[in-house]
Image (cartoon, rainbow, N blue to C red):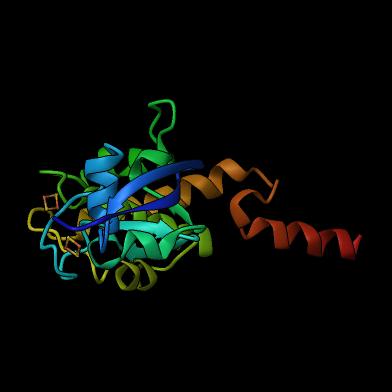
Length: 181
Ligand code: FES
Ligand code: FES
């Protein structure tokens, strides 16, 4: 049996001190030690994207990440998007636009899309395709997934109402009109 090592992980805003086996993968720690089973185990070899989580805001494959190597980093899993059980706009869009069928790929897809939308709130279809290129889906044919991400982006832009929330492009427009006033 592998020796255990004390590690500290910051997951979804909470710090956990854990005795994890030497060489433990982040995927196993999340699922088996922290009970965060939203992150899925698909290929277990870096091929499918089902295990995608965010580390310091960037999508990473938890099946290829050593838990001890991400101590002190901000780790976010799919559970972080619905803290009180209320779906985020992106999760709702997957549901409403039928971007999830069996749902197995969905947490990984949503986390990859979440990283994209934070970085680029109004992405093009090509941006979405590129951001999700490492995430495989056996059910949907991808069209509905892409529609869901673009739909969530449009909803966020609509909700902005000129306040520039989530980096909406209208913030730049508002700045320009202030300068011109
Ligand atoms: S389970 Fe990690 S990429 Fe497939
Ligand atoms: S919804 Fe089934 S694998 Fe994507």
